[in-house]
Image (tube, rainbow, N blue to C red; front, side, top):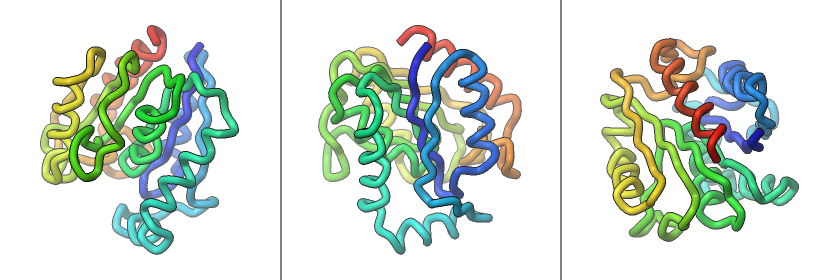
Amino acid sequence: MTEVLLFHHAQGLTPGVREFADTLHAAGHIVHTPDLFDGRTFASIEEGLAYIGGIGFDDMRERGVSIAATLPSDLVYAGFSFGVLPAQKLAQTRPGARGALLFYSCLPISGQWAFGPWPEGVPVQIHGMDNDPVFVGEGDINAAREIVAKARDAQLFLYAGNQHYFADSSLPSFDAEATELLTRRVLEFLDRV
């Protein structure tokens, strides 16, 4: 059994994010799904990003980071897109992390946006679609490749397609086949960390 802190994406804590968490829970893991938007969900990524921007990306990220203080330190930190911001920061900076699962996004480990190098002994999986205009088009894939090149236990999984939120069953971007493979890989990861 592994304990996971899972952060939602910019459309909020949608039924699809809850369903993904339920799948991990059904496999025997403890999954925390904090709602960083206080019950709000948004019809589009743009609406969600506008809400985050109104509060401030740094403030919203820190809202997620502060939630971890109420939980044990030996967690796997996971995030979908925007949720990667607090998840990756926690995985890289909070002592005791058991691993990280980064979906659709990835931050660099060097340069202006970095939290520092990837920590020794913290395994990570990064998942994205090979033609996702955000993950690929905005350069997150390059950050993912940097982690894979420098970290001892890091994997990048690319899925055929051009959707960003492909593992959220409640959204039109959902890809059942890719999500099935992603889920299998995630459960294998959780069973070994």
